[in-house]
Image (tube, rainbow, N blue to C red; front, side, top):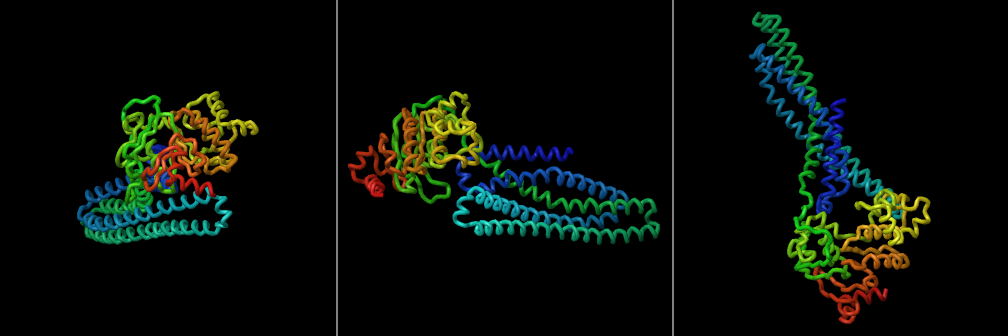
Length: 494
């Protein structure tokens, strides 16, 4: 019971620490690692660490001490015969070391393959409509068969090593045992060893085989646990997001400035942003437009410090954003994006996500975002379950919940990342009305592909190749007949 209790405590603690690190790691870590591998570490690897830390470690300590005690007794009884066994010891130690290295190598492969199994299964479970409409069931099944076959092969190599290691070690030990038995029997027959000493020596010698066998058998689970622990502690040792500075901030005015801001992704060969300088007065709406890959999302992602500039600075109310505590900096901002993220729960809990609000405040935000227009028609109203990732709601309904969430936070800065691009024309018009109400008296950064949605912006930034190539109002940019005018005419013609 108690080893089981310790094991479950280890699993709980490791999972809690791992999850805590996941939710505090910088976004660059998620760019480099698949969610399947991360989930596998959280579920599969922690179980292996617990097994190694309880059952395997208990056996290892107990039987190692038993072998040391028996060898000490054998030396005391007849040190000459015992030295014969000790001579074989280095050979057995080298063999066990080699076995441990193989166990660890194959264990790492198994854990990596489990990450692939989780990844492929997760993708298939999360995209049932895409798989069916493209008749890709056979393709996905083939992908899954490939990863589980790789997992099976890795397991079989581990089983082969485990199956061969114990007989080989036992064979070497038995040969040494046979020689010692022969010499001990010879000494006893010739009177150089008393019957009592002979009996106790042989009994201690025979007792060595059982703990040695268990020690070899436990090497597999122990090395699996060590390999799993390495992957877990690699994550735990990864630095979390910087906590920021100490400059106090309650509610910002909302003045944002990019001062020669440059940024390069860790794996990138050149800067994604190349010296962007722009000042956004408090309370104004700035739209950012441009071709795909021009740096629109990157420049907006610098403001909440999803990424940090590699050159220049981003300022809020005249101070570098790195001077503010990260938590307080992000408390000044709300985000409404194209890909609305809803969590499995009720509409009410999704509106209040991460914000301590009263029922009255939640209901007021729902009315302002016109969420009540569809919740009033539902039997459970705001207590209606949204389903996994909000699949039980339409795109327009999910978007209104996101707007209500932003309204509830009532932050001085608002980020709209293509917030209406996934909606049809009628729904977009309805949602745009709520967005305009949300944008009032807030510093707003709008990323948009549909230029018709940003005509009323106080200023429009046109980006290309990581630079701001044009800046002005909608009418000013059309009059210049530059890149913005080209983009606008293309959309207008369409």
